[in-house]
View 1 (cartoon, rainbow, N blue to C red):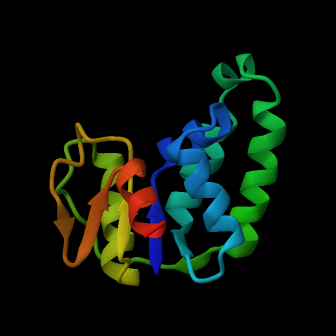
View 2 (cartoon, rainbow, N blue to C red):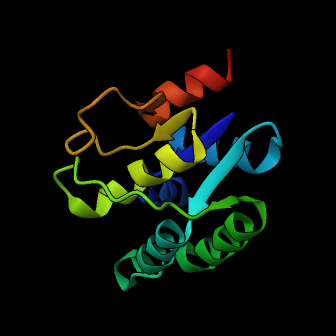
Length: 137
């Protein structure tokens, strides 16, 4: 199963043990789940996970660095060539560009305000809770 994980899911996973945490834990342990990334998506992960505002959470930055290393070693890297302008938040279009390139099964995001479409060219857009239920069936 090919997955694209929005940055907000990783942030949530590092802050509290809820659906995002359980998804990331399973993603890193289960080789049947393939994390798909691109240079632009990884650059966003690095930028956001290193933001100073998260230092108020215990060990956030240390856990973020470990997570980034896991992402780097475990992800399948793609180079999207299509440019899209579908999502209101223009920076989120890179996730759909990646989805189109890698034929992901799911794009998991907590951002339901901007991702208000149920799917994009065969990639289902789901919440962390929805993906948790799908992978634990």
